Image 1 (cartoon, rainbow, N blue to C red):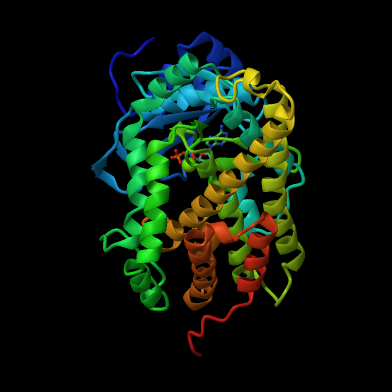
Image 2: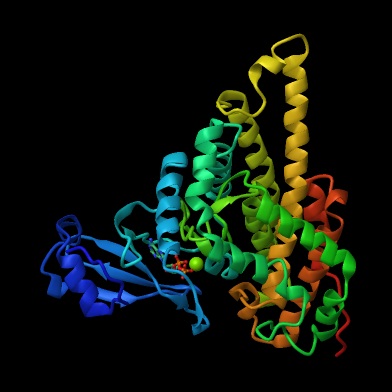
Length: 426
Ligand code: ADP
Ligand code: MG
């Protein structure tokens, strides 16, 4: 059965729909009536069903014509499912084994059936629980280096690169969400903003009047809008990563488009830093998560250093794009000059990454969408202390990104702010 018309699928419709897809029905196994179907979506935007049959299970994601978190008053185009599918299939080619396999796609229903990840959990949940993930650094840096480098002008001929930009250019409604929710709204009065009140009231007001901050975040916003460097995931926080001890899978690329690479790397680093600064809020006795916290900071450092190493290595071996034509660097000293240029490129990318990481932190504390790293700290004052520390770190990273000479400078600043007392009184 193909569907020329969109409708929101309820459990029974989904069962009938899947039963008519031979490959899917076979993968699930047994009689359709015996399949168990449950809606598990915990995201902000879409429906996600887990369908379990006698032989196997699948995940089915359907876009709604509005933002799930807010409701029908906030419409959002179904085409985001088209872009999610396009991104998932691109990423599967560029970084094999690091995204769930697509099993079926229905454009009209805005529906994607994919591999069910089990026993994976959302990384953010694992981090709140204090779990470390030994595979994470290697996997996420492979994902970042390969998806970013291999879709950039360093790897891809100019015509193909521009076709890529065109293929994702229609995803502008999702970009606009980022432009508003991350780069604008936390710095102005907007009804849907919230923060842990009253403790953060003065900081929120200060951020709304801080022109240094407004300049810095506007520069990043412009870069987000006007720098189609590579195919980025666009929402690569720890809630878009599913993990086990042995595996890492990146899900949910519906915000994908050609944008600045630092936005993805910064998303990973910013969210790890929030995990770190929220951690003391989850202590059951003072200091009982110190080992976990040390792992998190090492992870932040390795995410950057391993990413940079893999990216530069790809540049040395897979530079088939039209950027930096080899003939211009063939002469005497050419190789050394090109190598120095690669280092300069990485330094700029690091600076972007630090800024984007900070912007991602601030929006989670002063904007619309919050995260469980902080939200699950029950005592609001204790939560506000962790959030105030994060805002202090993020402001420095955003306004003085260039003063962080290395990732070690970022983790040192995080370590210092970890024990800073925002002085909220008794
Ligand atoms: P949204 O776009 O609404 O944020 P997500 O793609 O993040 O939706 O999915 C929401 C939740 O559904 C995830 O947090 C995860 O728990 C679950 N989920 C999504 N895809 C899969 C999958 N392939 N396997 C297992 N669980 C999944
Ligand atoms: Mg999500």
